[in-house]
Length: 133
Image (tube, rainbow, N blue to C red; front, side):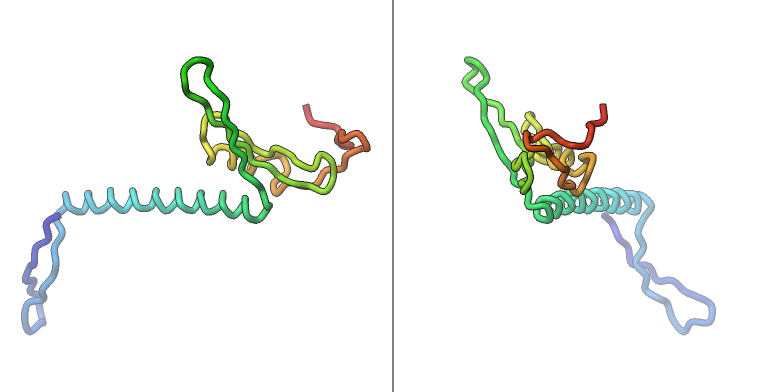
């Protein structure tokens, strides 16, 4: 980025005012950098909301690994789990099997009742409220 000092004379002033001048192409670069920073800040805010959801709801993050046949590799599954007093006591609220933790948390955060409400269950662990189909 190039900046230039310019002596600017204004009528009625006793002497020149030193001003820093930024050229137009430099201004475009500055705007692009500012936009990139705004996007980074927005991504950090989204991650903070995800962490706040995990902390505020006492969710657990579970990882599971399953082998990919004879490939010598495995895939990682991620589940966001909530714990409740009523049955079922452990509920998967969000899941992602492509190793994307953010997607699993987002799924849990956008569940039908977020923050998760504690639904009523019968003696056999079935929800008393009819599910929406």
